[in-house]
Image (tube, rainbow, N blue to C red; front, side, top):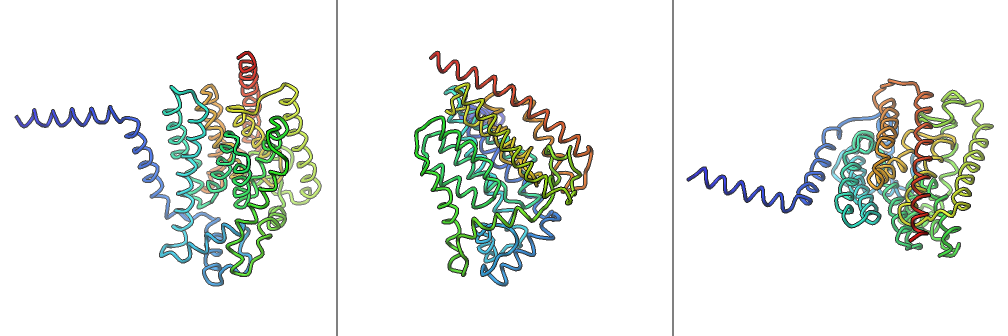
Length: 398
């Protein structure tokens, strides 16, 4: 009798799971995402010890009356709020970044949901969310390193999502907020310019919302004597902090100059900027001449390719600056599964770069890592352009 009752209870439980499988797996993913971030909370990286912790202490002691470190005003304001919480500095930084890990995973899932067909969108969205939430690169960035890349990339993906839905003012505002957190949001400007040129559905004056949003993000610090215009001017100073063509990153410049070659930086950085501009322009002209649509899946693919180019060819790239296109690569892998091997390769490159800095692990030299990264980009460029061409032709036929 007892065994029969237990069996009945088990059957009810199994039926419940079967009936609510999607939500059960969603809950498991979020719980795992939370649990996996707890063990590394105590890990102290070199960046935290030398920079983040002293900045936290200085802001706690003197407030926001002057510039501390090289983060923008809005992030300094968040640090100031964190100093008021009964938490250790390391927990404050990491918890904030981890919260945005979850938000980033959710908004990326929404992008995938929006782009997939009805029969794939629910599970596709969940897969994208799960992969981002459990990605070693994402976990290392926030829970181990205490970096804030998930924050600016969250707003960057929000900007792309708004652009997908043709909410142009909102997309500009979100891009501005992203830019207010990190200079690397500039990687997305080419896709916005391309959409403006091809779609012709909004005025160029909409772009004014970007700097307005950047300045608005600095307004809370006005009460502490700061000038909100510093949200923009601070970036001119940041570009001079690290006078190296490549910093622990698998960029093209690993093949040209030694990583710490300061002597040639001033001359080569201008060359790098012009080269990047030329490559971006060439790619965009190719898309325009072939009448590629910037709607739907093409928008995310184009944003991915253009941000990838920025990382590969701009000067002074850190390993973490690839974060934007790494997240977009996951979305594309769910949308177009044939890119899964390339997505894995891309993330392995990022993982090796992270491990080199965080743990001193150097299983491969950076010039070789750069070669692998460039090959992955070339393969991506070919595969995705064929996909976009077919998508554009099918749309025209329809």
